[in-house]
Length: 166
Image (cartoon, rainbow, N blue to C red; front, side, top):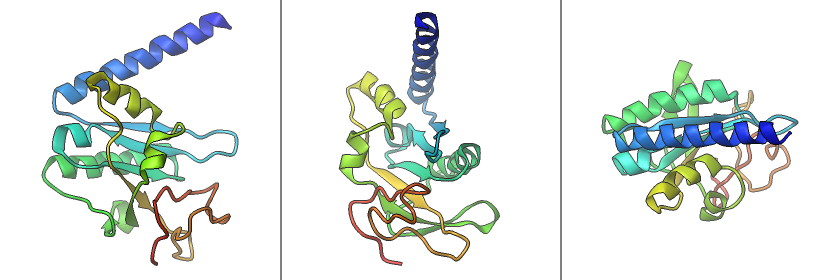
């Protein structure tokens, strides 16, 4: 099993190096992660803050490939000058409306939500920057509003510092 672990470390170092090089060249990346075993998928940008002075973006709870594509599109718009702020509604692919909320600093610094991005940013001695979570609605049009809401906790946990207004 040690050989497998070595391969994982080499692969992770390669990803970190690729992300770092891209950011040094003024480009952002997307980390799209599959939750597995009952955990939800999530995707986030890496490099929007360093390259464009914009908060990073995060989507939790939808297919990682789909959310990665959304973030790629939004990141390209940010690179072209768009500013996405907490408290706004953002319309993305096929009219999907997402609400934006600032991620609490505790979530940015603890756990594994941003582990890859943190490893990349540590190359420059930087901590993980402000991040905006884009929230999606369920089939009834409801968005997560309360921290720790059992309805959303395993599907799309709210990483905001405060309750959200619907």
